[in-house]
Image 1 (spheres, one colour):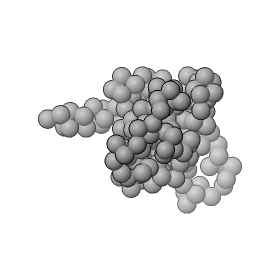
Image 2 (cartoon, one colour; image 1 turned 135 degrees about the vertical axis):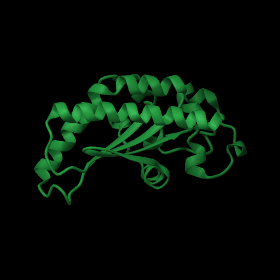
Image 3 (tube, one colour; image 1 turned 45 degrees about the horizontal axis):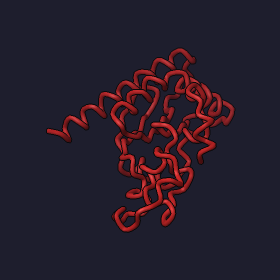
Length: 183
């Protein structure tokens, strides 16, 4: 795990940034928020830094782990590490985990679906830095799913513009959510 932390690339889209964990996907699609931003349907959920409450559904105070075995970033996600271990693909090495998809009902050809996913991933990768700095500033993590639902195939410039608008909309909604929590 510490090796993955050292290989952090700001402008890449590594495996650790992708949403692969089944429990986190279920949490996102069942309890997450959603909005439509043509041509995308975007699911998002901001979550707390402590992953144990999501994976074990019990109080974290049962066990106290050894903090010296894990880096500080991972210890706050999994405080009782020697006794209970959060799966590696459930830990956050970056502020967000993202999932990309294209509806197979709309686009029958796998070649077109893969091309649209590739364009969407690339536009997200190019424009994620302000979103990540926002999430780090408010000290939270985010689960994100971007599903391409439109029938027409848009150009990269149009997709990139819509991704930027979607990320800004998520930032606004997180701020609204936090303001409502404090009021």
